[in-house]
Length: 199
Image 1: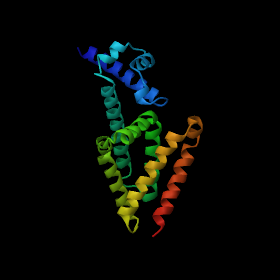
Image 2: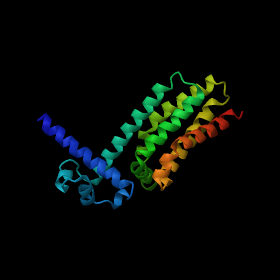
Image 3: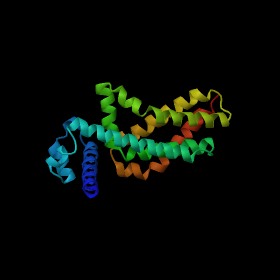
Image 4: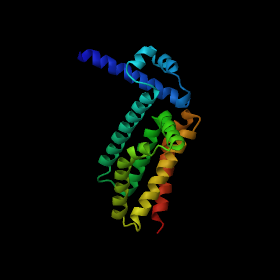
């Protein structure tokens, strides 16, 4: 029984991977189950035996992305417990640019859902982990002697998330972008630090 469940789970992962791959090129609403099956190299029956409908498939995709986000940012929190302010900002930039670049299609889909469906539940799902990250920034800003630490942390967080997200979503030549990823992180870190140092 366990071997059957493992094989079934592997097939589901193939379906989710294929859907994510297609989401880098197409809107979710424009995808067909047949397209997903073809990309995953499974039958449409294999998909419907694991998901109820496309909306259920979407919820599984978003749940998987949420798990990746929590894991990536939990690692960031672990790595920055004793770090200075600059290293914390730099690692946050690196963590988010990696997270977003590895989940480009899902990010685009999530943003579309929030915009078109006004899906506040989806936004709130990610809120807890981002609040913890923001609290880490407040902590490091206070240690650094910055005034208005909470305000600066909120604005820095907004700037970092939006900058990383926009670079990923609007970067058409991904090969060029990957080549410049380190430079982008370095420049964004410098910009955030310049803003933080203004009293």
